[in-house]
Amino acid sequence: MNDRPLPCLPLWIDGRGVASRSVRRGDVFNPTTGEVVRRVPLAGAEGSITRGIEVVEFATGIPHLVKGEFSENVGVGVDSWSVCVRASRRSTSRR
Image (tube, rainbow, N blue to C red; front, side):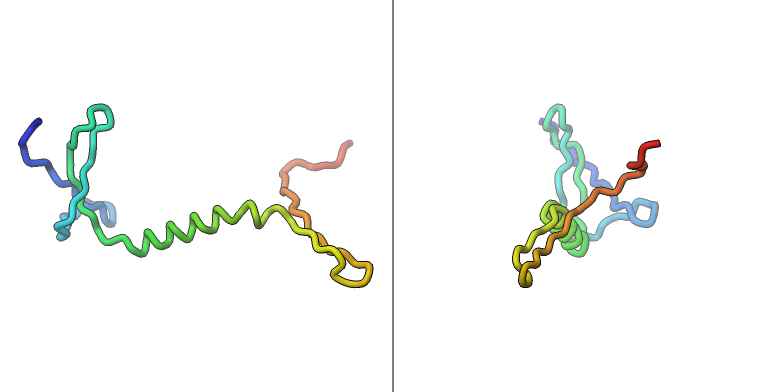
C-alpha cells in the first residue's frame, strides 16, 4: 500500500477549478484495482439532492399517470374513462 498523500480534486465552479474550504472528503477509487487514487471535497449539495429526489419521485409515478382510468356509473347510465394515447410523428392514415 502506498503511503503518499493523496491529491484532492478541486470543485468545478463556473468553468474553473476552485479549492474547497470543506474539511469533508470522499475517496475516488480506481475501478480496476480498488485503490484509492484521489480525494474529492464533499460540498454542500442539499438543494441538488432534494431536487434529484423530486425528479425520481415524479419519474416513478409516470406509469400510474399514463395508464388511463375508468370510472363506472359516475351518473345514471354514464361511465367515464380516459385513455392515454401515445403521440406519434407518423401519420396513421393510409394512402
